[in-house]
Image (cartoon, rainbow, N blue to C red):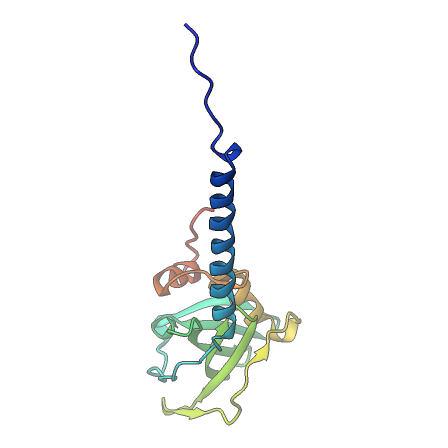
Length: 175
């Protein structure tokens, strides 16, 4: 038994016209949404300084020739603006510690220094309120490593705070 041949809906002039009109409307809608997203300017959320870091909460992630770098696990957070904020502890080979509260923007490959840690556990806010491009040079490699290995996947945040902490602990999800 032979079945009847199906009619191609697009061969009908009215159906073709309707399909083109629908496609045109979708294109305009997507273009408008993209333009609206582009016009929204990124807005940094207010910074809340964390408690001073404790030695038992430090996660070592990089050792250069003269310094070791660690992140205070209690300070890692993802802000509403999409930045990753953390306390960085740099310890020289002679034992001198430099503590800073910083942020990284995955979208722009930038870092920002919010405050310096004082010996008494308080903070001194940075006078500089600018985002700086991350450097890959060996002298500042710690920020590049935080960006590439722990906090970001390309220009995208690698996940929420628990995922970032897992990555710092050496636990990585298989892609």
